[in-house]
Length: 585
Image 1 (cartoon, helix red, strand yellow):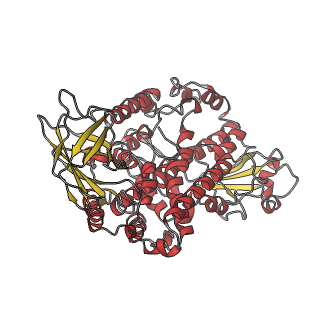
Image 2 (tube, one colour):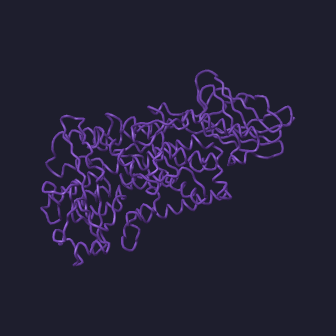
Image 3 (cartoon, one colour):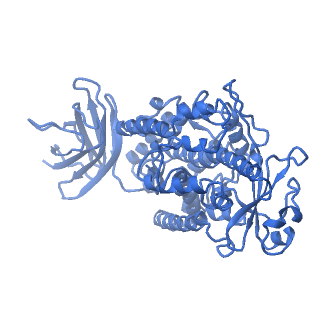
C-alpha cells in the first residue's frame, strides 16, 4: 500500500502548540484518503516550535496530491493551534509543501493546497477552482468593510482588537510587547506630568526639558542644544519627521504679502525676492489644511489653540534652508503680522514654535496616520478579500501588511477614539483630527503616493539645486529597488498585458481599493482596473513603498537612531507595527 511521510511544523509563538486531536486527509486526482489521526505513542505531539513527522499509509493510489485536509478535534479544553506548514513526501520520492501560517481555532478544519503561486487561469482542475472560490467566500465574510467616520477610507469591521479575524491579531508576545512598550512610552514622556503642565502656562523655555528628562542620547541632546536655531528649523523640513510639505516657490502666494524690503537682511545674493524666486532659491510650507479646524475643547480647564501658518524659506549661499518669513494664519491683515528673523528674539522664536506645532499636527494625522497607516489598511483588507493565498500578488504583499490592520484597530480603540490619547494630548483632539482627515482625503491622490511624482510635484527633484535632502535621495533609491523587484515578479506570472487584464481576482482587488478605500472618488486618480504589466508593477510598488519605506521615513524620525531596534514610541502605537520591507519593530 502507498505510504506518505507527513511533516507538520507548529509555530514558535506563545501558545502555538496544541494537545487536541489532529486528523489528516489527502486529496488527489485519483481519490481521497480516509482520515488519519496524527499521533505518536508516548510522545507529546504538536508542541510549540516542533517539527513532527508521521507515516501515513493509504489503501490505494491517490494520484497527484492537490489538497491536504486538517481537522482539529477537542481533547480536553479549548486549545488553538498555529500551523506553519505541512510537507508531504510521496511514495515516488517527491516533496510537496503546503503552507498554512494560520491559527486553527476550536474544533476547526482547514484545507491546504500546495504553495506554488498560480493565477486563476492556471487552475484547470475542478477541486482547485472550488478551493480557490471557497477561500475567497470565507475571507469576504471575515474581512468586511466599515465606515469608522464619514469621509475616512473604509476600515476593517471590528470595534476592538479581539473582534479581528484570529490570523491578523497580534500574537500573544506581540500583544504583551505592545502593552509594555506603550506604558514605557508614557513613562518616558512623564505623560501625567506632561498633561499637568498644560493646565497652566509655561513660563520658561527650560520647561521643555522637563518632559524629556528620561530621554537622553546624542541626538536628543543635539536637538535640545540647537532647536532654537534657524538652521536646525530649516533642516527639519528636509529630513525631520515630516519632510513631505516643503515646496519650491515659483510664485509668491497672494495671501503672504512679503516684500523684498521685509526680508532683505536674509537674502545673501544681493537679489530681489522675485529674482530669488526665479532662481529657485525660495521655498514655502503652507499649513492651509489647519485653517478653521476646531481646537481641542475636551478639557474645560485648558484653552488650546491652532494656527494655520505659511512659512517662507530661503536657500542661502551655503545651500542650507533657513526661514525668512512666517505668517501664522491664512488671511493677511493687521491682526496677522508677518514675523521675520529681524524681529525681537522671542517673537521670532515663538513664531517658529507655532510652525512646529502645526507641523506636528499635519505629520501625526495626515502624513503618518492617513497616508501610511490607513492607506496600508485599505490595501490589506482588499488583498484578503479578493486575492486567494495561492495568488502571486497575495504572496508578494502579505508580509508588508502584517499587523497593519491590528495596529490600526488598536489606534481606533486607544489613540484617535473619543477620550483617547489624541483628545488628552493634542490640540487637534476632540474632533479636530477627524476634520483634518476628512479634508485631506479630498487631496489624496494616487500620484501623491508615487514617490518620484510626489517629489517632482513639489519641485524638489534636483539634487544639484537642493542638496542635503536625504529623504528624497534615499527614497528614490528604495523606490527604484522595489519597482525593479515588482517588475521581475510581475514578469514571472504575467507574460503579457492581456494576462494582467484578464486576471479577474487582480481586477477585483484593484476595484476594492478604489471603491472602498478611495470611496469611488474619481478625482483621486486611483485606477479602477489595471491593464498592463508596467502599471501593475507601479501599483504594487506604491503599496509596498507606502507600507514600508514611506512609513519608516515619517515614523522613525520620531525617535532617536540609537533605539531604532527597540519598540519605544512617544505618541503613537508603533510598537505594534510590522511592515515587510523595512521590518518595523
